[in-house]
Length: 309
Image (cartoon, rainbow, N blue to C red; front, side, top):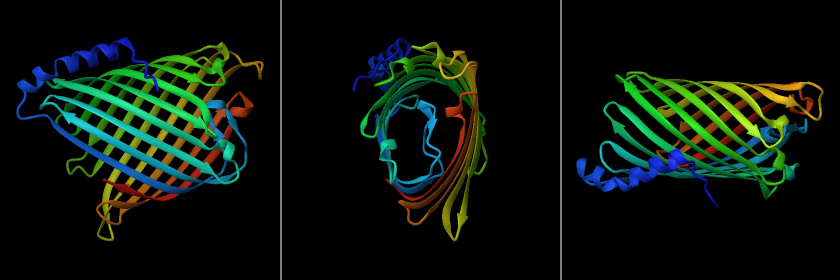
């Protein structure tokens, strides 16, 4: 497993770690290490089995057993400097269509430092996906970001990113990407609710021009904490609108491809114990495209349990 670090990320991370002893001396107290984790198992029903990265759907339904594991660690070097790292595992095993079983490993590292009232940082994500237990694709993504909190309710973050996506068997789809992103968050005074709004612009240059595109994505999220039956509960709503304009005619159609993706998700969780919650998720996706195989709709319903530690 090799992680390709882009130059801006590498330089920032190297500077931060070489300066870590100095930062620690400037802060108060000793560096503090903390960690969290969660494990969720779910039973899912999919109305349409698809692989978005391959522009394909089988137009048939199936059920799946799902496993999601997340491990996160944070090293607070001082009041202004911290390093975060983590690992994630996501797996779906289908009943009727095992050839669509998907397993994804994710590793990340994030380093940040407060300068006056602004937080600057860099991160790198490495993802490796297996389809039917065979090598499928990998992704390396590095970004630089700046963020600031205004008062106690508004938080703004902007970032630029570089990414490299590689397909094991479909080299023509492998691509390099660049992008910019802006995110705005609002938090209620009682810390029970927050709203997020994000806009990203990206350009992906694939080996074959028919897979190269430029586009944008708009994201909206709402999270509300509440008490239900004297238990802590949380409702999360998320929506995403994606537009993509491809650069060349596809070999399957005689026009330049255009895509629109509309996705909506609702998740509700209620705590059964301090460490265990029941989780329900409903997701609906509508993928519109001038490429017939990429034009479809799907719905996912999941019911499961999540343990946190």
